[in-house]
Each structure stands twice: as C-alpha cells, then as structure tokens.
Image (cartoon, rainbow, N blue to C red):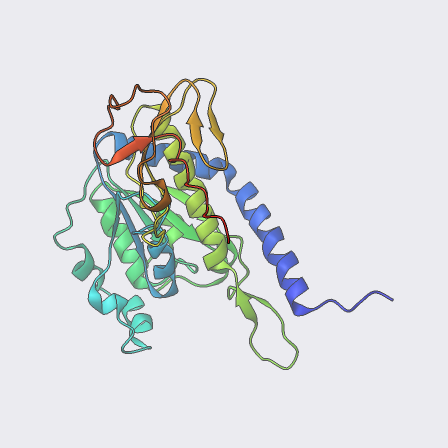
Length: 299
C-alpha cells in the first residue's frame, strides 16, 4: 500500500511543475526583455520597477538584493510601503490619480524602461502608472497572471495591463493566486505569484548580465552584506580556458582575478607575480590564500 500523499508533496509537485512551465512558456519573452534592458543600460538610460500591494515584494527582489543589478530604481513612497495600516495598500491600489504622487518629478523618458508588476493587472494605480510611463515614451514590461487578468473585469474606464505593456510575462498562476485546496477551509492556500514572478525576474536579469558582459560592459551587482570574513571578488577577467575553482583557490586560466582578502585570506599571495611586484595594490592580493600555520602539537 502506497503511503498517503501529504499536502507538502502536493505543493512540491505543483510549484516545481509550475516553475518549469512558466519558464518554458515565457522563454522567448524573457529573451526579448533581456535585449530591451540591455539596450537601455548601454544607452545610459534608466530601469524602473513598480508594484503595489503584495507585488511590492517583487520590486524588492530587484532593489538592493544580493545578486541584483544596482541600476534598478523603485517607484514607491513611504505611504505605499507603510505597514502601519494593513488596509492602506489595498486602498491606494484603487485610488484614481494616486500615481501622480509617485511619478511627479521622475526623470524618465524615451529610452527608459519600467517593470510594472500586478497579478491581476487591473487596479487603477497600476494601470494609470503604466499609462503615464507610456505617455513619456518609457517601455513597459508587465508581469501578470494571464489567467487571473483574463478572468476579472477592468477598472471602470481603464484598460488592463496586458493591453498596455510592450512586453508581458505570465506567471502561470491560477485565478486567485492561491493554488491548494485544504479540506475544511473555504479559501485556498499557497499562492504562487511571488515564487514564479521572482524566478522570471531573475532569469531575465541573468540574461541581461550575460549580454552586457559579452558587450564589454560590466554591470554593478549587489553582493550580500552578511558574508562575514569571506573573500570578496572585486574583479574577474576569465581567460580563454575558463575558471578552475579549487577548494582553497580560484584560478583563472589565461586571465586574472582580484579578491579583497580578510580573515584567513589576509596576506594571500599572488601566484603569477614576482615577490613585491603585485600590481593589484596594498591590501589586495590575487588567486590563492596564504598558507596556514600548522596547528600546535598537543602535549
């Protein structure tokens, strides 16, 4: 007799399957968006990101996030971010004209790009902000649930986000976002929009990074602020044969790597320069860590 499937099993199979489905479904669009963002960055223009309600979580995925590019400019204010009033975010999403408090004074225009994230793609704040971006010649990248957005009606007198966006990603979520039926509960649980949305966003930015590096433009990327005394990679020039990562060293064959050393890596020595002739500078070394002193023998 097979063991009964737990709700955890159901969730794991659902979310992993949905992740594969969403990435495959959006593959061509991800490539197109990555191309548009690359063009924006190389032209010296700006990338903005906006989301209201819980979609703010996905704006945070792009702003000051380890592994994210520093170019992203969030479109928000203290009132939109506040959690003092749990009902405020929902009210602001539906307040006509509120977008002006967020966009007045923005230095945006042709050549810029703005992510606009909304699971339903229908709330007035989202739609009016996307329309304002388009009026200024800004390229709009929308991220919605196509099923949810296609099911609900538009706000009075307004289109929905899929009708405005230049590029549209679909998080493949169901109507209502939550995916699991739990016996005894009237509402479903386990929403998917944040997990899948984050995966689509990071897939896009990873391709942007690859494209930029291929064009000779090295973007600034946020690193974790909580790495303690680990060595920090500050520059990398991979050689034609790539990178060999050993347990205690990072060797770039045919190229060079600079690492800012601290802790057990302090005093690391360069494996390619004569003693005292390291060009990297004081306080920085390359390649392999300094040899450790043997542990004292126990009596």
